Image 1 (cartoon, rainbow, N blue to C red):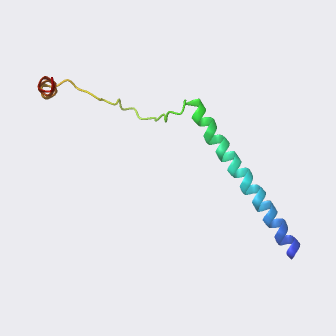
Image 2: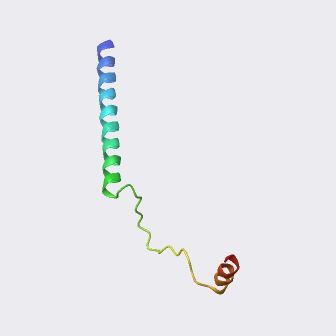
Image 3: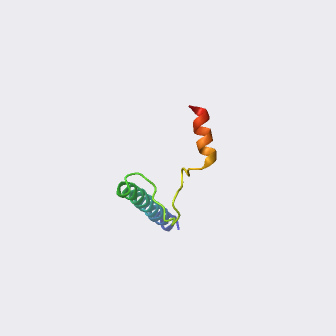
Length: 63
């Protein structure tokens, strides 16, 4: 029984180490592909500025 238990623990340790190394390698690889920038799949465009009357008044008062 003792040998079976040791054998199981060795196999479990090796399997977890292989899984961890695989996960780390996969995450590093995807960071290189996108240049470290997270790329989403959203169809929406991000609007940072929209020219309105209120913005014009703000910019005129800020000068």
